[in-house]
Image (cartoon, rainbow over all chains, first blue to last red; front, side):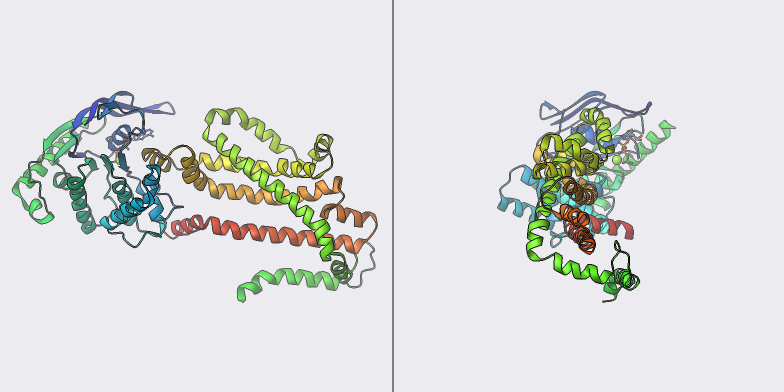
Length: 257
Length: 254
Ligand SMILES: Nc1ncnc2c1ncn2[C@@H]1O[C@H](COP(=O)(O)OP(=O)(O)OP(=O)(O)O)[C@@H](O)[C@H]1O
Ligand SMILES: [Mg+2]
């Protein structure tokens, strides 16, 4: 279980202080899929970095499976918002995806299997020997997703992972995330600024206020577990939920002005 | 073919110019190129190459490789450690500012006049550009790349080998390129001070015995050597940094 308790983060650089997160409290059950939405600049990336143990918070605690996070927890994978910069340009796509597995000492054969499967799942079979910079932005983003998936994490953090892909690919990747989540029993925390995407994907949606950031609202998405792009999005309940999320976000923006 | 003409055109023209302008030269110190070329063929026989050029190259290679290992290893350590950097950086800048040739007499005092001295001189001269460039390269590693490595548990030696060094490698290569020309200069200079063989020694020997065309031929050989080595370096660099040149082209196009 992931527990975020009173999390606060103040950046101070060059005498300027920015309070990115004021007071965040929420929990994510093991095996849950939670989407986080919030206006741009509200501290979503900051939050994810604190959970991943990449950033020291100013106050509050992050606990993962009973352990306080102070460094990167094992079994946690992250898809960075800056997907282009998070791939290593001196490595082929295959090496990029298999590096974390090597580090985990997964045997060679199993490693190749996992890499092939992950690349195939994101529709990138056949690009193994290419360098990341030979691929389009959307393809690079999918390599980053494949890397996280091949790692077989128990917790998966995704920071706006579909920002650079076209609508059709995006729909495919959304379904991929849901099917992986169902199959691998992984806990997913998914950041997006797309309200429809949050409602379609998530079992819960957490809405953040704009800076200084607190949890604005939280809903459980009571749509059937089997979702598909056509029917789920046409479901009246889906429309209700997305309207609710939309209103909350608007309210958050108004309050901050 | 066309590219070859462009590349070879100017050198050929210069040589032709030298040949024609010097053909009637009466000046003892600037003999006609014709004589120099004849001396070249007579002087640089295979035995001579083995006896004088090979030892020079071995010393050059030993000094250069040592400097590269030392420079990269120290550079990574300093680049990764902020406190260490703050302590040693002023000292490094000071050492770098010393023109290496003036160290030859000093180093001779305690390292003698053997091969060891020459290798030490080369190491001392060319370690600085490698070291400082490595420090810069290591410091400039992208933060997101470092975070990625950290998040996926890539640390310790694997972090240095798979992330830090490759990321810094274009800058390291720039340092190595500067160091190569310094190494050649120091090879020659150290041999001019005190040696019993080597290219620098031979050229000075010719000069002292007034074998002027032979002296010139030695200088030409030195130039050719430097040219060949930098060509080799460019080839090796192009191969090792293929990803980097590709990446830069890709970024320029977009
Ligand atoms: N390293 C930093 N130093 C100082 N301020 C920072 C730093 N990183 C982020 N901030 C500030 O913290 C706030 C939150 O940034 P963050 O990147 O977490 O937002 P975000 O919700 O991910 O935005 P987006 O949706 O645009 O990605 C912003 O005001 C930003 O300017
Ligand atoms: Mg962000």
